[in-house]
Amino acid sequence: MGRRFDYLGDVEAFTTVVAQGSLTAAAVVLSTTPSVVSRAIGRLEARLGVQLLRRTTRRLSLTEAGRLYLEQARAAFALIDDAERAIQGQGGELAGRVRLSVPTTYGHYRLPPLLERFARQYPQVQLELNITNRNVDLVAEGYDLAIRLGPLPDSGLVARKLEDAVLCLVAAPAYLERAGTPRTLEELARHLCLPFVMPSTGRTAPWLFRDEGREVEWTPTAHVEVSDDVLGVVSLAEHGLGICQTYDFIARDRLERGRLVELLPQARGRSRPFSLIYAPHRRLSAASRALIDFLGVAAQA
Image (cartoon, rainbow, N blue to C red; front, side, top):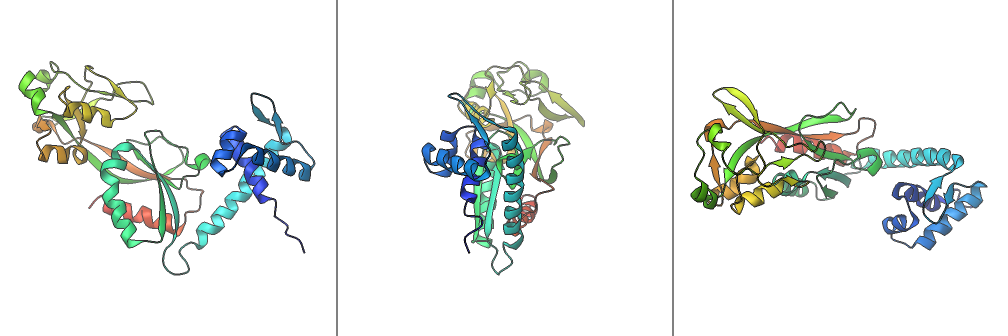
């Protein structure tokens, strides 16, 4: 009896080409060559007796048959993926792979010690960590979990708050020697500020304060604008270019070493939430569930 599904590699090549948009990009993902990918799709089309992709010199596009087959193929692979997730960790020591996407702030400063503890507790779990300031599409890009900053839109995703990260206002000693130390929000307006431009809106992120019991959102006037990577404002502040607002967990070490000085401590206390999110319809592996539970407890410790 022959193998019934020995062509699944060709199906995977087809779905990868569609996802990546070209034979060349798909070949990189699959660690092969464009010619091998092209032959795989050719074999699949010959087997099915239909054309799945229209090929021109500039682009690839799905035929109607290709669109229908793609939907079913993705659903079939999702079922296989779910089957693997359902049994991971049931045979003894917890094992499996977890794909996690996190922003640079959390990925560089908050997550490493937490993951080190998780790895010691679950040494057979493989972690694939994507550190980016882009909000990935969990389902389309195949991520199990993601950490997001701020209030989450009603996206249909499940969110579990990890913590409310406290904010602080800081500047380098060299800047304060040159420009003086602001004592009030009114004085702050006369200083060089380093705001961050939010990529999702193109607007300056407001600085959050608590002034005499009132919650204040204050929009700084830009001296140097930073976009894409919010850690840039901290680097610039550390080198004396101005004042920035950042998280305590980022500034703590620099404050202890004297590289930065906290300003307006009487106006601190505001925070922004970080949450762990995942798709509700996707069956989570035992490894993913363990990481969710671990981070939910460890981040608040």
